[in-house]
Length: 111
Length: 114
Image (cartoon, helix red, strand yellow):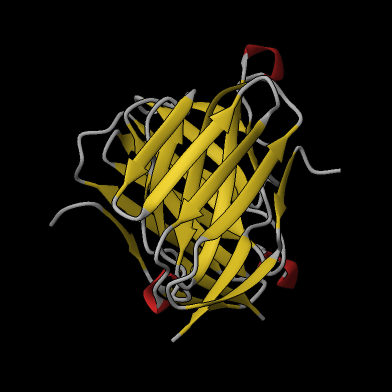
């Protein structure tokens, strides 16, 4: 079983829809990252969270440390948001500060 | 030039070849990383360097040999690879190796082993 589980694995949305991608993890963490990977392969870091909520443009990321859960929301989705979204966590000291990655959520936004 | 650059972008090699991947960051970061991304699998962290010192080696086979001559450059030397080593190899850098800061990724090297 992977230490980081994402859902859904695949998501298709109409342009303008509100999108939510979920990430659950099973280890104690020092930080959680949301990454975006476009078809060409390049990866961009969207957020780094250790608590609460962050917002950048149309993107919002939240984390609940007690429930070991994070969500990435995209408001007013656009075809250029089509990408794979990856959740990654940095385990705490008791895990040797290991990095764990989800398998990604593939998002397609249709015009 | 800014950000994280990787060369080459594509590489095809035979199992008996020796080749090297290069990564360079112009962000003044102290930590650099090598990742492997195979089809349908999560990103795999291979190596972490902090101030030129290797801090993590996640049970990577010895046919992959990293080198970090300074905090701006990172190499991955490849020899006697197997076809299953074909993947996208990504380099990244950040201010520290503990996941406390965002990572900046290079465009990757698409490696095919014949």
